[in-house]
Image (cartoon, rainbow over all chains, first blue to last red; front, side, top):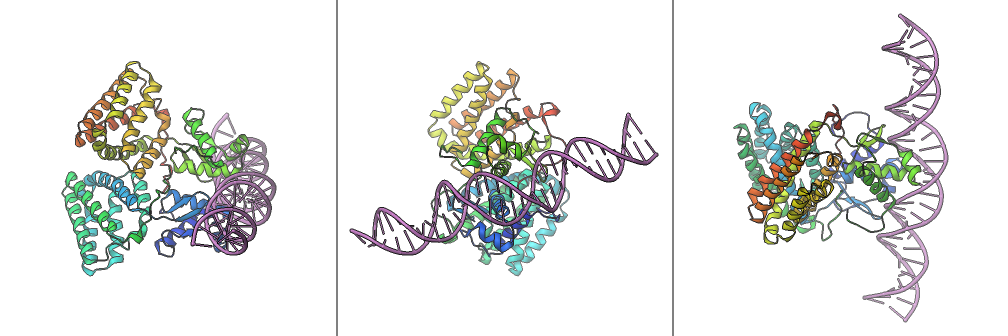
Length: 227
Length: 227
DNA sequence: CAGACAATATTGTCCGACAATTTATATGAC
DNA sequence: GTCATATAAATTGTCGGACAATATTGTCTG
């Protein structure tokens, strides 16, 4: 995930598709065909196929047998389910990270300052980036790679929404207020308080997502999990 | 996962390997080569390869680039990390399931009765099977497929230990005592109590696993996550 | 317009090949 | 004899093409 090492063909394809999705060049629900990427990227269909499968396991794409893959799109129910799991895991992360972070809060206070600045300046892209780092700080400090991986998979599944949420200035301030509560509790070493604040924050995010129009969501069918 | 439908080649291979691992025919740490399964099962290397990747994503196998796959084996640290995540998710599951189960506790009381009987008879295989169903009852009732899938992946990662744990009769009774506490709280609609009892139960399981000999665990290297 | 049927496109699986890399074996130096 | 090094063997990673199975699209008929 952070490696700069010589990437295999499959990794390069996966990285390319991931970047395209993040950049909005591939829209949620859009169908991706093996042949197209094969010719467009000048690689074999086998490699494209394997990249598709990997990204499906990572939660970025959805696979329908004999019908190919699409950029993943969740139903409203799936979004609720995702936030429920995410809440439990983020709470765990902050619980594990609090002792360490309250003892050495340098990065936390720096992040909080930057978040405030970005919110004040109404700089959405920067705020969104800092928001990701804010959460990453806890998952990394928690010292549980499995937890980090699991949360990352969840994030991939709803990445496409990140930039459609918080159009409103009030949403940014509310979100940032959540951050402040979390950071305060963590800095004070108040584990239970930090956990509660994190749960409230995740619930805020869920509500923001669910307030979006219906055309941001998939309908009916519960598409494939990976297990 | 529950489908009886005409399975694709890849699915058949994956099912075959899964069964072999569960039956103990493939030991943890053992290396699996594509060519061997290809010839032994009379299928192409491509399909074997894809089955390997799928099982890796499911947590049953571990993949090392250019070195192939092995039946997954965890370090003690990874076991701790896994149980931490599992605890958070099982607690969530029981929290979500408690209202439903306390209103219609038929299956729960039946399972509890069977568990008691198996424990009394010291019938390990049956107890282990019922134990799985006990946990499945909560994850299914919770009505969150993502949660169920995530927990299933975790279970795959440590499946090989299920039958090496609880050699002692006391371990069975302790485990079953945990079950009773959970069931009582759930039946009474005591969500918080059920959650706490589930966390205690997961901790019991963790300790049992960690009490095993060193040769049940992998050493040093943090092997690949999937994100 | 609906349904049946044919044409097309795409995925699923197979095969064979070869380069890249790791693992095993043999050779040589000390 | 042991250690390091070079060579050989085994295995994975990627490629290209082929074809069957399935899904999607288009056409025709009533």
